[in-house]
Length: 160
Image 1 (cartoon, rainbow, N blue to C red):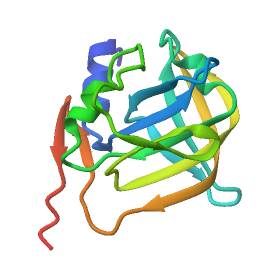
Image 2: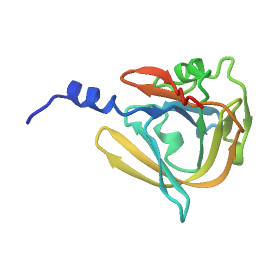
Image 3: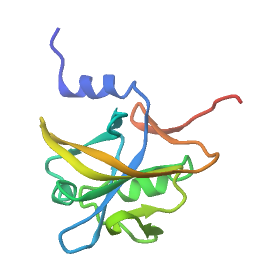
Image 4: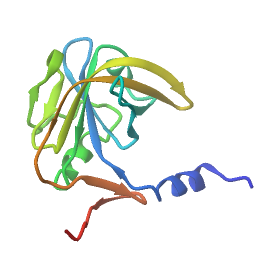
């Protein structure tokens, strides 16, 4: 049965995802960050993760080699997600961070950070698929993730 791009997007929106901001530094050493919900683990041995980035994003070169960090957002960090949702990737006004491996920014107050080196960059249609090897990670005790579901932000209600 044929379907159009809008139907495909709506169907994919039925799958709730966590929200991350992936950060790096560009060729001039300036911080770059993009909001990403297409993020997943790939392998435990070696520890690999992947995220997808639109090919037209000006941030693609910063994520094509070197290092990046995946910052897993907490449920109260919707504004952080929105700040990095543009294709420019340089919306750091009022965003607190500290340097991680290779100077890659780690955003404050996230529930987890995964610091990675670029392992592979592959073609993925209108996106690039970036696979990274996890070299360091941090997790916060407590806190709930920021989620994205059916085109809107959501929170987890676990009843515990």
